[in-house]
Amino acid sequence: MSQSFEGPRYLVSFGPKRVPHCFTDVLILGGGLAGLRAALAVDPRLSVTVVTKDDLQSSSSQWAQGGIAGVVDPEDRFDNHVADTLTAGCGLCHGDVVDAVVREAPGRIAELIAWGTRFDERDGALELGREGGHSHHRIVHALGDATGREVMRAVIEQARTLDNLSVWPDTFTIDLLTHESVCRGALVWNPKHGKTFVWARRTILATGGAGQLYRESTNPPGSSGDGMALAWRAGAVLRDMEFMQFHPTVLYIAGGARSLITEAVRGAGAHLVDRDGRRFMPEFDSRGELAPRDVVSRAITVVMHRTHHANVFLDLSHLDPDTVRRRFPGMAAICGKFGLDLARDRIPVRPGAHYMIGGVSVDSAGRTSIPGLFAAGEVTSSGLHGANRLASNSLLEGLVYGARAGEAASAEVLAEVPQVGEEFRVPPIEESPAVVDQGNGTDASMLDLADIRNSLRSVMWRHVGVERTGESLAEALATVEGWCRYVLPRQFADPQGWQLQNMLEVARLMIRGAIDRAETRGVHFRADRPETSDAWRAHIAWQRGESMPHLERLA
Ligand SMILES: Cc1cc2nc3c(=O)[nH]c(=O)nc-3n(C[C@H](O)[C@H](O)[C@H](O)COP(=O)(O)OP(=O)(O)OC[C@H]3O[C@@H](n4cnc5c(N)ncnc54)[C@H](O)[C@@H]3O)c2cc1C
Image 1 (cartoon, rainbow, N blue to C red):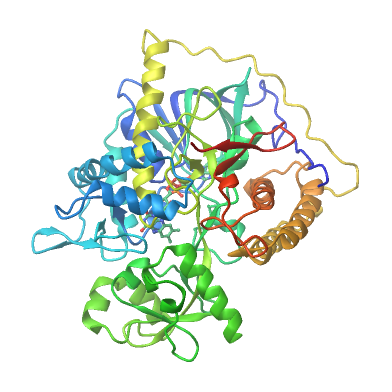
Image 2: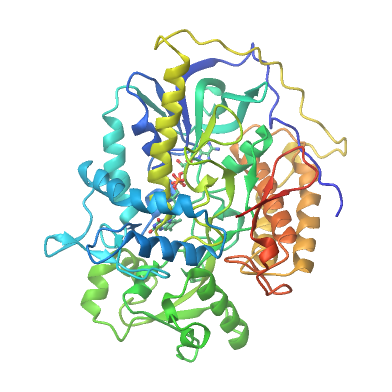
């Protein structure tokens, strides 16, 4: 394999004397559920700054539909939720992490209720949904299929009560600042003030996932893998980057947004049928439509090939139409915009990139491998999801690890600063070296960034999608490396360029991981290596500067 081109440490050059400086005790990058939960856990005597590149209304957390998993039904058991999570994770979950997160779930859900979240109820009790891979009804949901909107409303309102919190919207984090391998904060940019150094005693990365690397995706535009790329440039260990979960049922209407159709629709009894109206899931798995997502996504891909059709269909016509419309009002409205009746018509769907399982490696308190840097939520690899995330376990992970990272960061600051409010010592950061120019005459302004971005998303969809082969991955890597060579050394002036650079960096880490993992496991399906191998019961972990990834074997 040819040597990978290593881009510069910082995406932009800067002179410390020319850039304004700000100070905060705890800096949180990302204003989704993980970031805000972290903010709520910081000691009120410490200052907290939350930076988000858009606004608090624009995260994946806001878009979440189905709900949050937790054992709240007396008939259910922690052991059942643990077993379901381990089964979905295909041998790569950390048992201790799963056990602890599952046991923490009811408390975290109760906390949300105490902060004003109105989960759906039936007969005075929480109404519990069931999704693929779950053996019991255990998903709390809100507003039918708009759980994220309601949870975030309550969490944002709670965060607004904090006197120690400042939120900086429309502020893009370009890079983490490190000095002597310790994270000291971040370099951020916004259209009003340009670049700013934000010096922090502790930094928490909560920048979410990377679904936008794929042409077909359920994720909001901001899920471009920025956090993984900037952690990589700063030297953090990243792992399991080959594991991108594809949601099996994404609405597929030409010209329409790729809206996710929640798993709960299948939980409520919807069938998946091919173009001829034949139900096909029982042929692939005894759990039918409620098999784990990787199994359903793969089955749909096979049926699409078999029937030479661009999609399959969800069929709810055998269910009570009033119940369908009451339970899934958001989805019924979206379908309605395209002249489709969710309760009666066949709804065209196909898989789309949905959830990034791999990411920045963290311990049980959310500490990364870089001192001073914590991480929480979808940007991380915590050991909870293994090789396949169980539905509705990710909002839960954001709550649990957000709280832990906030508490641990806060405790570290308090232990180190005897006098709260003590003056901040800025590390002697040097002028960043000018970003390298390859001298091939391609000025940054001459590049059609949208074209490269679209091409990247198509390559990832075609070659690094639901089904992969060594050959197609090698082709994807060569193409992406080619783009990296002339895009990474450029210096851009705004987020469009930085985001593309981040996407390229993350794409090649994902492809490298997918090439290295010469087996099929969970969401990673290698058509040329269909077996799961015990030798690969390991994380593929990698750090900038290492020529090769290393394996972290599981006991
Ligand atoms: C359509 C959809 C439905 C889903 N349904 C469910 C569900 O029912 N249950 C479930 O458990 N999970 C669900 N998920 C997954 C879940 O929503 C996410 O995994 C979770 O919300 C991630 O939370 P987070 O806080 O880690 O990241 P996010 O909520 O994505 O927040 C990331 C934040 O980081 C900011 N950010 C990113 N890059 C930068 C940068 N460079 N500079 C500054 N800020 C930056 C963003 O602006 C944003 O504020 C769903 C996801 C989608 C897309």
